[in-house]
Length: 77
Image (cartoon, rainbow, N blue to C red; front, side):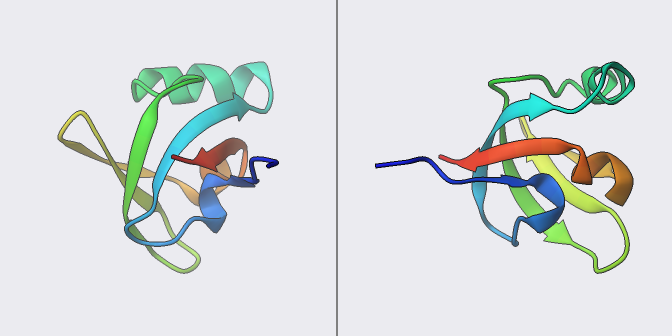
């Protein structure tokens, strides 16, 4: 069975995800500042249309801008 990947910006509220890739060095560095790297598990708290994606990681809510979320590839856990 193939594992479906999508971008964090495509994820829906309540989904549990694992980061599989960040696109580009600058995006990788921005994600690392939030404690998000490959293998990190996230839960989508809320996705605001045209706005940020709010995720929970280690009991911490993080608002990730839409552009950054579009460059973070994730898969379902």
